[in-house]
Length: 407
Image (cartoon, rainbow, N blue to C red):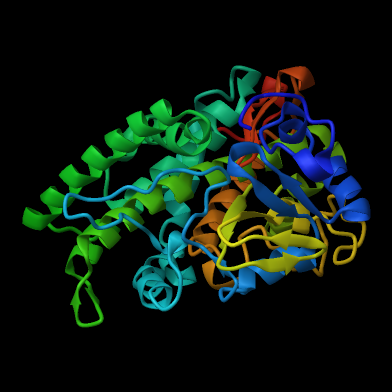
């Protein structure tokens, strides 16, 4: 079943694309934890949905029972190159291939490597803010949150950052709209594939100091990195580097627009922003990933058949009262915060340091220039759901004379 029929039983017929789930999934997870911690559905190819922190993290760590060969929340056909090799990335790779391939990417996303992008990101945020600070109203998701990650990841990949809107459109087409529409998915997948094939050819004759050039000259087990691995990981960096951080920045601003005490405290105490970012990530974690059962097994009180999907809702895990005190409250100075917004196990997000930096800078600069703001129309806020949940329209208003600076 892949229709938009209304859900009457979340335990046995959930739908991650249901508008109620997209808009406000928290009470649904609460209900499931109390009565049926592992939900099941026949929709979108069929899947199971654990809702407790323990179940989600146990599956994420258990590579013997659960494979990462398919990580989308709805089935998507694999893609292959002209030699018949599956184009894949570390996010969809199991041991023993995963560790050496992941190790290739780590140098580009280590804390020290990420820090060199902090000031360029800060200047980007200021430029964006200058573009609308005099207007008194703006869609903060469209004109701010959406604009930052494409340009930052473009710098890492060595591609044209001025095409940030194109990159965001492609990613939205593949990861958001394309999950439910094969024609849209194929359109944008083909665009991305042609784009990166051209970029790869350029690096062969004109190598630069970027991730694409690095992967073309790196070695894996003493041999050049296979091209299907290069292509898969380059595409992953664009896809994973945009939608998730765009969603997280937008969700943070959505929260601050409705909680003036939190907003004013962070404006007055910017040193608290890194701690607040961790709490915002916990409370509004955007990502749900899938695993495939390697063989018949049991998850909670559910029997899972070999080949069935298990959806890892890291956002649900982050709201589990068995792990987090007052889980449905955003406590911006929460001291103990072992959230799993970036996943768990061997597939924990390789770009977590970059995402944290972007979110910290984005919120710090927004509050420095626009310390007072609110939702212009709460009913006009829209959310994307499915694989990545976050605001797509976030109209806010603010007093033009109330900003701190416009430098």
